[in-house]
Length: 290
Image (cartoon, rainbow, N blue to C red):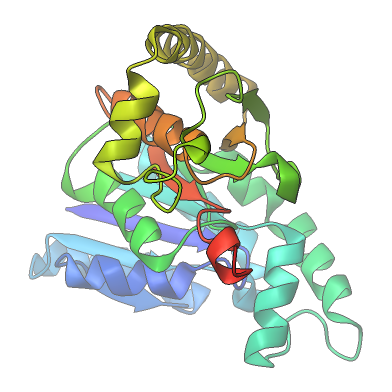
C-alpha cells in the first residue's frame, strides 16, 4: 500500500496536485478530519481495494494538524510507505492568487490577507521541514506542476527538492528580479544585424545555427554546464528548493533564447530535479511594433 500526503500553504496548488494524482490512479481524500485519520489507515490496510492513496492535509484541521503529522511520522517509522509533498509559493504569489479568486484566507478572519498567510506559514513550517519533497509553484504553470509530480510518482525518478528555471531575457528590459544566477551572452555574434535573420528568434533553426557556429558558444555551454552540475547538489544540500538561471542578451530574442534552449537540453540528461525553460522577452519587440 502506497500513501501520498499532500500538504503545504493554502493557495500553493494542493488541490491541483490531488486532481493530478487522481488522474494517475490514486484514490484521493482531501481534508479528512483528524479524528478519522487513524481509522482511515486501518481500514484501507484491511480492505486492500486501493493500492495507492493520496491525502490532502492542511491548516483547515487547525490544532489537529500537529497530531496528524505525528501519527504519519509514527506510521512511517513503522514501515508504512508514506511520501509527504509540501506545496509552497512565495507570499507575494499567494497574495496575488487570493486576490484573483476573491477568496479569503482560512486564517485571515477580519485581518488582511497578508496576516493570514504569515500565520499559516508559521504554523506549517514544521511540515515543510519534515516533507520528503518540496514543490515551489510560484513560477509554475499547471502543466509544469504536473510534470514535477510525474517525475516523483509515475516515472519513479529520484526528485531532489529543487526546481530549476532556465530563463532568457533582454538586458534592455531589465535583469529578472528573481534571478539567482545571471549570465551575459552579449559577447556572441548578434543575428540582429543580419536583415533576413532579424525577424526570427532563438527558437528558429536559422538563429540557432548562426549563434552556435561561434566556437565561443560551445565553450561557454561546456563551462556553464560543468558549473551548474557542480552547484546543484550543493544548493540542494543547503536547502534551496528553487533556482532561476537567467541568460541575457540585448533584446532577449536571439542569443539568450538560443543559449537557454541549449542549456535546457543539456541539463535534461541524467536529470534528477525539476526543470523548465522560459523566454521572458521573446515577443516584446514585436508587441512594441519594432
